[in-house]
Length: 66
Image (cartoon, rainbow, N blue to C red; front, side, top):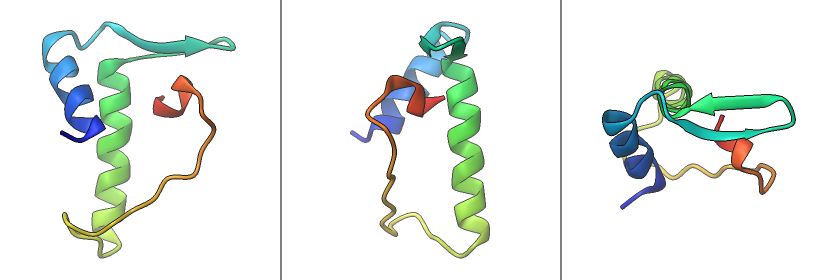
């Protein structure tokens, strides 16, 4: 199971539940899902397809999901 599958499943069950917070920033499961779907749509629009590999370089921080 991919990490986004966990976010999607949790969003279905508890969309308004807090996913991550810190440094004056917070986001719910629904907000994180909306952002991830937006990123996916942007990649798809640029020619990426479902089985293409993509890497993410970011801080080791729960707010990276937000």
